[in-house]
Amino acid sequence: MRARIGALAVLGIGVLLVACAPTSSGDDTGESPATVPDEQESTELLQVSEPHQMTGGTLLEGPTFHKDSDLFLVDVMAPAGAAKVLRVDVDEAEVAGVFTDEVSAFTSAQFHPVDGRLYLTDFLGGGILSMTADGEDVRTEFAGDVEGVRMLIDDIAFAPDGTMFVTDTRGMDGPGWETPGRVVRVDAEGDASVIARDLPSPNGIVFDEEDAGLWVAQYNANRIDYLGLDDTRTSVVSAYPAIHVDGGIGRIDSTAVDADGNIYQAFHEKAEILVFAKTGEKIGTIRVPGEGLESATNIAIRPGATDGYLVVSGPAGGFVHTFQAYGEGIRQSNGG
Figure 1 (cartoon, one colour):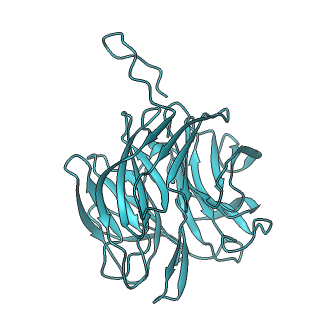
Figure 2 (tube, helix red, strand yellow):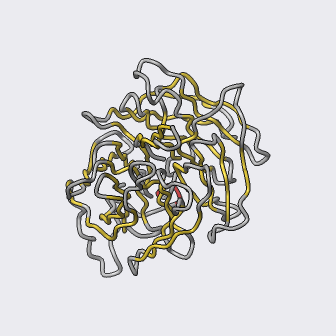
């Protein structure tokens, strides 16, 4: 999920708003696949959006693959009438608008592992919507306060049974020692419970490759925490800082995991992705070339392959770039 602060001037609202790693298996010839370099540059696939005059920019987020291999993403800063959900044919390098409305600012997208619908977190509305891949049959899956406090929902992760885990990224505009952020669990009935609190503006959230625990990127601390869950995934049984990230003036955004458990960490105000082994070592850097590109907020890896895609935004506009992933794509490599 995601976090560049967009000045939605007309709406009078500030919006805050991604991560991949080596493959060890050989191919059918018995030869080892080409080694992915420790450092690589992404390659532009296509431009998806122009800066919107009404809101002062564009910010792409939440890339996620549909079962038909098209890549869906959202533009957080798209005003009413402009495409807020977009569909990219990555093979033909073509883009089409899917959905817009009057009020939402979507910060993440992901397909539900059970019902197959596209789920979107609405940062401004504090809720979660779902729709078909054609942008139809829009439903509210969650809305309202949690423990009496309105959420600033940023990113989303699904357990295999469809239970949602979201980051409440409150505190993003304050100093890192203020910790009002939370991780919230939302069950199939829409009932919400706080499973972690007193956090420095959590942003990215993703299950590990075994669905045993959650990696949570703390935007105001530039660190990735690991939350171990119990067998029912209803409570946290262990939690600790796992990876400290050198962000400089940038801050960490959305997070993804590949089939080997490698962690891809994206940035706000830094156009690159850092890749870590689950044991903490940095194993890769994906740099975004070009002028006017400020943030690389999220990634997706094509399921069952190592074709990586990242969304990058700035004054030059919003783009999809490609890169070589360090492990194959799985459900945890897409969206959020």
